[in-house]
Image 1 (tube, rainbow, N blue to C red):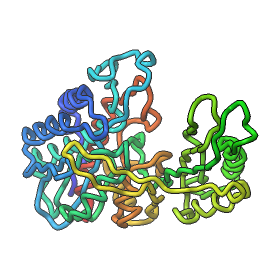
Image 2 (image 1 turned 30 degrees about the horizontal axis):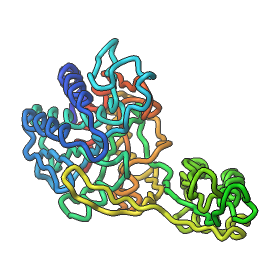
Image 3 (image 1 turned 180 degrees about the vertical axis):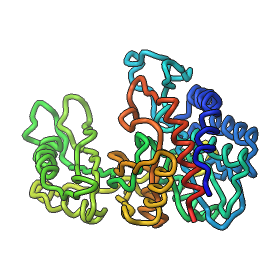
Image 4 (image 1 turned 180 degrees about the horizontal axis):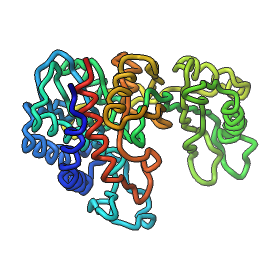
Length: 397
């Protein structure tokens, strides 16, 4: 029988320790492709806690495992962050891990080093209370997620190092159980014109003017996209526009726009591309379209190219993983959790979206804190998430 009171009491006892650990790793800048120093600090913490094994893979992801049972349960948290943005918008230093009035502040505190810290300390509870079962528990600190979500798990699963039975994403959920997200794509559209001297524009073909009606059609397309009762509506928006010309006194000979396309149920890479190609303006201007690729080096100099197509995914509310999460939550709190989904994208696009490994989410903090100035996370959320991860592990059969 699971002793939920003992789990809760032990987690509360570790509150000070987990806060200090989170403050330490928040204080280490770890932009995508530059995570080496924070990985070193995490490895130190895992070894101090007494993880059975601590491994850093050839890409640079870090794993700590406890136990040698048949059921492989992975708690994943990405340990890279976005940049600070405008420093003037920050009231606190984003890289000191300030702790004040029950909140830990700093870049990455909520998105999403806090959830990962809770997973690491869930392992400490399992270890210290000797809660050994027929499971292998993994806390995975994955890298490069902010640049290319799911790239890390595409590599991990292809390498065959771990074959999870279930993945719990520790991204912020405000302590709700999440069971899916919309997918996304990064698309590029280009028009090709003819440059000439700006004093006689009629001699050329302005690529920017060619793009203008396409932009309007894309704006209209956004209102016509599919919707789903659970995940909501698909969306498309222009995120960037640029052009080329021989000089500032010449007609533009090319124009390119980048699209952020969010995919709901029933939308795929092919359907999203086809709907752009069918736009009257796209056909008239003989524009070009492509899905972008990601080919950046990890901090260990590994390149693992992938297309920037990230499929949507869900798991059923009445499925095994969600119901185990509900049972674990009820054991801790005596009530059912709220069930929801992320607005943004996660590593679940690889684990569930591409590889069909059952995936759910439960994390400390509010997803609205992601990428925002003065990012913060409640310290007590770290404790609650820690408790849940232990309870979920012990309930997973």
